[in-house]
Image (cartoon, rainbow, N blue to C red):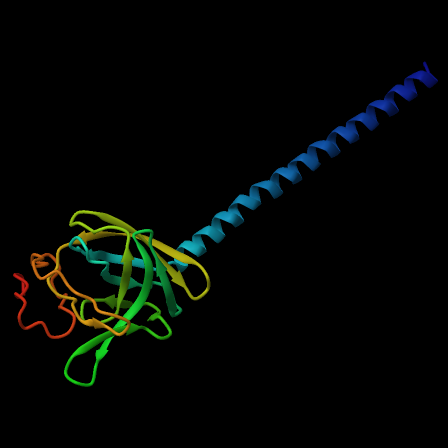
Length: 216
């Protein structure tokens, strides 16, 4: 019977140490991989939650302008599919130097005036908020150029929590939306065609001299 030599014992011990270290490295790597894999999942979840919190714009459009006009308005329906009210406090677009959230109110003498909407547009949880001619709308002022029917304009809504919602609005002809602005005149394009493909949109205020929409 041969007893193990000192060299043999040392070799065995070295092999055991190397094996343990190798196993530790593999386990550490597996642990690191697991942590790394969990990070994107958490990020994706956060992104999904952020996306779920966003508003959506249904049928956004902007009234076409004639050369020389420097004001127009954007309309559509803001939809909130979340379980909490969301407030729109502002908007912006490169097409206009000034963008305001407006409402239409009586001027006290039978006419209608536009004015900034105090507190912004509150879109109820699970509900919607209409932006229409004659009611709440997004006012574009100091236009950089005329907006021609068929143009597409990028607009960004600013929410109360500091986030934004971007959408693209199609420019369309529309006869109406000609009230006076409380901060200055707002002349409409009397020669514009009827906005026949937007059923339900009415002109701002009383426009008895304008043609009726062909689909109403």
